[in-house]
Length: 94
Image 1 (cartoon, rainbow, N blue to C red):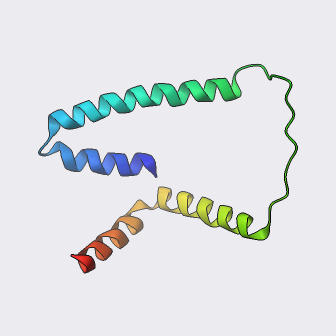
Image 2 (cartoon, helix red, strand yellow; image 1 turned 30 degrees about the vertical axis):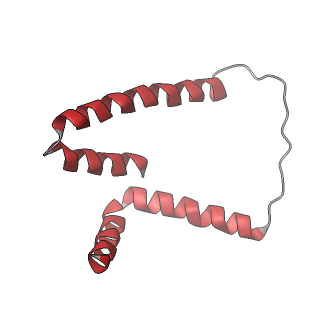
């Protein structure tokens, strides 16, 4: 979802503000470096010997996680449905 949103903003803004979009792309690359660095520390370094025990969550939290996960996957695969819904909502407001 983050990539689709950023792509839509950059494409729209590139028509009038190309310099600003180039700066935003540069800062996105810098941010990606830090995100990748975090992933390296999480998954590619030796474990520190700490053991985390699984917790039991209530049904409300599980339901919220399922709805959120399905929304992210669904809108990631079909972003046009979300964009058209937001467009219709914005047209109704303005």
